[in-house]
Image (cartoon, rainbow, N blue to C red; front, side):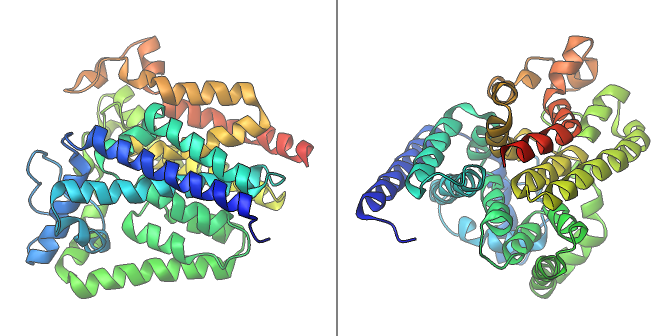
Length: 382
């Protein structure tokens, strides 16, 4: 349906608001030492210079480049411009990406809303999230790409009337973790979409092999299986099953066996619930359950990876608003940072500190456990 003149004015107003939000974010954060952006730029610069992408950590951080070679190639535009310009570019893409992701999710959750209303709500939620919602704040202040990846996946899997798979494949090529959505497509027997996504992801690997053969061999045969390169696995910001078990058992080596066992159980449960949601036609719930399953079972899920918690909050608001309030407040107040952390203190958490220090991954587990109730609530609203 074509937009009326009134609708167009509202959309334009939303676009102007998004531009203002972006400018505000750039002004507020531009002087901050943005760690992950420096990592991206260092990897991309190494590719341009023909040196080892994975060898030398960038200045002002001891973290090396940890993404596939294709990611370094994609990040080249951020390396050939001044640092402040690179941050402005990344923010100018990330904020609209969040609006787009929320617009797609809202349109599916409230199909009776007009385009005008959906755009307005998506813009307002984005404005609030950039100031209050910690996964979004951390993504922007770290110079991360999580909002962009979430937009690629949501548009690919949730926007009606499009051929699916290519955007998901690109997201997987940049950061391996979206591969769980390809598993979801296979589980739901959407073979064409799964083949498109897997083929696109394979093409990104091929691009890396052609343009950076040595780095590609090293990454796909060795570095991919070293989660410790990403940072200290026990650090409280790692809100995954592996991070929680590392803190509880006293080290990543001790956490391997219980993590593998729980990962299998939780991963199968989450994907089965996603499959059942898809069978019921509840695609938003299916995609978000897949996302949360990926966050919980991944070896590393930093706070900024939990940007998926924002659309989950919208889903909960639709199904059970008291649960949505608790969920959203959790990600606003961030109790994981109320406990001793950093410098080995993560191992000293006791009693209620354990609950607070692992509250995000525990909330994810509760959400997965409550998936049948959410599925029933969605069915009752039909």
